[in-house]
Every structure is written in structure tokens, then in C-alpha cells.
Image 1 (cartoon, helix red, strand yellow):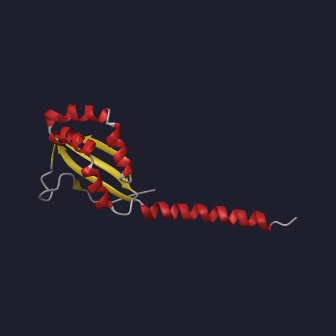
Image 2 (tube, rainbow, N blue to C red):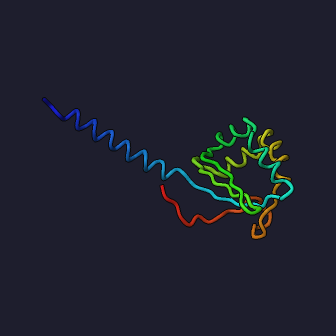
Image 3 (cartoon, rainbow, N blue to C red):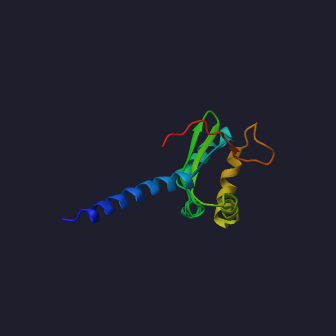
Length: 134
């Protein structure tokens, strides 16, 4: 019996697995951001995010964002997301131009204020990634 086809299939499957892992790591950029939440607006912010608008969630995904989370602690909101696209600025411009997202931000933005260390004009301030484990 010729084992060559079986060996070739095994090598192909192994190479696909390795390429998939390399592709995944190379094409995902992780972001962490922080902003203050106004104490009197915390419950409203939580209520809004307990039932986000489907159009806003769809736009987030359409702009190549996945695994997006927002956490709260001591007056601060911390967000984490993974970006899988190739042009982050263009995708963020697309999101900002979306009418439904603009409506959503009109509700969420009044709940927030930049952290003291944020650069002028920056809403959600970048956080430095100091550790990551896949």
C-alpha cells in the first residue's frame, strides 16, 4: 500500500494549522483604552450596554473589531478589543460616519470624560500592553 497520499495529506493539514496560527497572530492588533465614567451616569452607561443596538454592534464587526469588552472599576472604564483589518484609521472613520453609531455616541458620550493624562482631543486614552499570553 502506498502511504504517500496519507503522508501528503498529513503534511498539508499540519501546514494549514501552522499557517492559520501565524496568520491569526500577524493580523490581530490588540487595543486597550481607558476613560472616566461620570458617577451620576454609571447606571445609565451600564443600562445602555446591557442592550446595545444591533446596528451599532454590526458596525463594530464590519469595522474589523472582534473580542470587544468594556470593564468598570473605581470610576474608570477599560476597554479591550482586537482589530483584524488592515487600515484602522479608515475603519474608525467609517464607524464615525455611521448615522446609527453617531446616535449611540450621543447617548454614551455624556456619560464619559477623558482621563487626566489623555492628550488634547483624545477621548478614550491608549493603554500600554505590558503582557499578553495566547
